[in-house]
Structures are given as C-alpha cells and as structure tokens.
Image 1: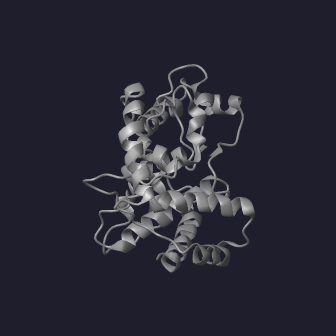
Image 2: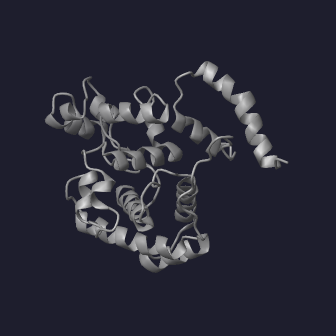
Image 3: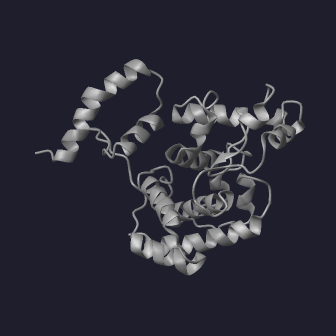
Length: 258
C-alpha cells in the first residue's frame, strides 16, 4: 500500500502536472524538479527515482563549520540549511566511481559560493552602481561584447547576481533556458535561492562561465587541483584563498556525510 506522501506525489503528477504543461509546454525538467522541491513533495516516478548523492548529519555539519570558519549567525544557519536542502535533492554530482570526487566538487562549489556572496551564503547582487556596470559591461565594451550584451543598459540589467555572480545577456539566456524561467525579461529571478543554486552548480559542472568544468580539476583517483579550479569562474583571482576554503569545506563534508 502506498504511503500518504507517495499518494500525494501520484496525485500531483496525475492531476496538476498536465495543467502546468498545458500552460507552459516548454517547461524544463529542472523547473519541474524545483516546483516539486518548493511544494515539499517527493518526486514519484514508477520507472525511475532520482538518486540522492548526499545526506548530512546537520549537527556535525554545523559543528564542523564553526570549527573551520567561526561563529554562526542565525541568518547564516538559515542560508546553509537552505543550501543543504538543495544539495540533498541534487543528483548531478552522481556518476563518478570514486565518492570523494563528487564530495570535492561540491566542496569547491560551496567555497565559491562563500567567496562570491561575501561569506553570506545567500544569492546577492554584484556590488556597484548602474553606471559602473554599464561602463564595465556595456555593449560597446570588450567585456560586454564577449558576454553577449547588445542593448543600451544591458551592462546594468545583466550585472552579477546569485551564488556565482551570473553576468551578461548570453549567460542569463542560457541559465534561463536551463531552469525554465525567462531571465532576460526577469533578471532578478537569478537571485532566487533555488534557481541560483541550480544555475551555479550546473554552470560549474558544464563550464558555462569560462569553458572550464569541475571534472577537469576533480577526477576519480587523482589529486584534487583546488587552486586551478578557480578558472571555472574567474581566472586565478583569489585562487589560493578559495582553494583554502574548499579544502576546509571538504573536511566539513567528509565528517558530516551520513
């Protein structure tokens, strides 16, 4: 006999999903997953269930975090719990033979989030004014052209947002297509916590931002390259500091994984 949680999932799929697809026929798989997560409904599929790569002992995680990174405010606890909720539903670090590889890739993602969000672990806006962004990323600038900015005001409109400072029209278009949201029309949606997590991790896995992927630096049965992994996001800017954060996150994860 199906339990009540599974019955709710079946009813959601059989009754609600067709209505959503009728209105949004191009809604992506990842967007559907996010809808399920937000409703706190377990995805039910008679043929296949998504693998869960990680499960954490939260007490051990927060004890380890304090030991490595210092005191925790309630805001930081809430932000980290939100991220752990997302990670425990994420199967994209799967498919590696050595479990340490996926853990190290995740550790580097978390270190990047910590650095790029000014240690808040929450999606944020890039620091600066519209004038500054338009000067840096305007369609007439070299950087702006490389980011696909074509319209006046694109530099400010598509300034950095999220866990990894998603920047530029091209990146917003690709990320929006991935999560099933029109980020060109609604760029602030890139700061939504669920979307920001999906964008950041997928971008680092697939090499959206610089062409460099997590799999290049964290391989099965190989020494992790914590320093050069920074090229996934931004050259070697602060590479050693972020490498140190990642190494510490890896210790926290190893100690708290169930």
